[in-house]
Image 1 (cartoon, rainbow, N blue to C red):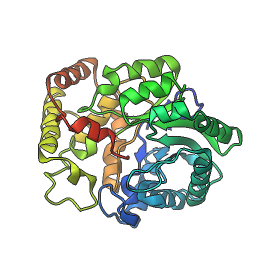
Image 2: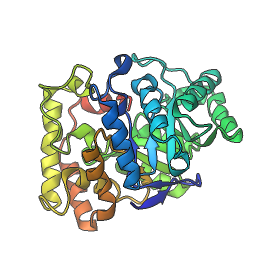
Image 3: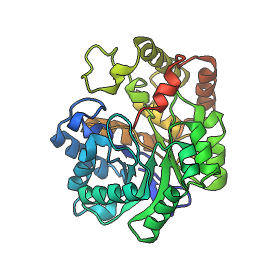
Length: 331
């Protein structure tokens, strides 16, 4: 497993990280990818560590803390081997948010207890409105204070959209951002966010690299989705468009090639120097083995990357309502 610096934070992270939204399951009425088996989740976390995955991204929203509890159990006695990032800001499943200093401190203390640690390596604001941060400078000040106290090593902003990512870097000097990016959603390279991150030394965490599984042929048409699987909310037309786009990207990269569908999608994301780490959601040991192997395969060639970029420019991979809806997914 190769590693990259997380911007200017001084942290080093594995190229392939572990997105733990799905590990929260449907605990407490959460919406992710349906119910999960905690025993398999713990096996997947151990397998990831064995494969060299050092970066684990979670949130107090995922299973309302259940994902954090699993991480705490999995890495008890192994804390020095992993870089743990969590998030704060959401207060319920309906999307209510609180970015006050008091809430951030309470949320972090609760996360530390569940994670069985005295600090997190990265604390991120979870999809805050940029105008709210503008009106309330005490929110960023609270993160910096927690860093000074040693309760967090670094702070960042998980943004709703690539355009919000530009604001997070330009207006708030965020040292780390987390943003959607994948073969079927290349806005972060189009709007100049990657270039800006490279110029400013901003760490860039890539979420949804597999487009919720639609780029891997593992996401069906929705007929058998659990009621708590967020993919039921997408229209059949949007799901079909993403799956068709996946086929086009695979053809552009040489069909089957020396990679699986997931590895192709991850290698594409790793083809951009501004990217620090890519965090696919992983629920099973087999997911871990497939995804972790993408690092050794390396980035796509320059020609392969250009072809995938061209296909994205030529294809309409979002329906009119698909793009803003994707940005509102609380991963």
